[in-house]
Length: 278
Image (cartoon, rainbow, N blue to C red):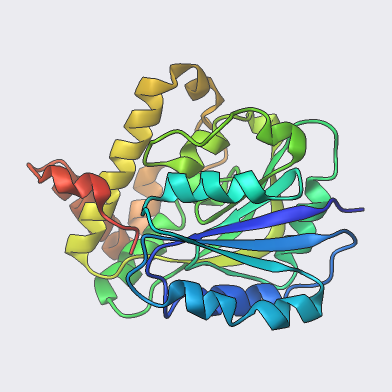
């Protein structure tokens, strides 16, 4: 069983990334119900919208109609709201434009969302780091944190069924859409598919610090503006290895992780609030 889904992809200057994202969706396994894809190009100064439109005939051949919105105003939340306004299906799969899904992920998410009860779902993330040796070491340790290995983190890809989408109206003007949506569901309402997706981590220590600082600001923003949601935060799993054990297993990874964590707390520019994820 599966449910019809709208796949929404916010995209800001994503030439070089959105091609892989769309190719992966084209390679997805068939689903029993209808799928549509909506790309919300927002505030782009490159050819993101045109590149996405170039995939329309191939998606039509797959039976997944593709719509591209070319929005003059930049901003992820506005893009998400614009996509939601035209989405035809109640169940939604939100995919970052630099994410690559595995072939079975969309079908598994559609199956998980096939229920009348409110539900949130995501896949098993694979953190990709290619160019920077520092980022590779950092990512190796970060990917083994309980946040990544347990529960349903949902960074890069998250999905909700029609009943779940009714938990909020428009996306609020905040940084962390994934945190806001994830915490709108209890741990029992969050489900993790076995299928994977690749999520790229930004390259280099200085960019990592900026993005990590932005992530922390985003989480604090949700805690401050929506304190009632924080009760849905995942507790540390009892079977998760303590930090000191993980540090002993990967001293270099822990050193990189600790260095970034310390640097985040140094004085910084307020512009770090708007640092991109890569």
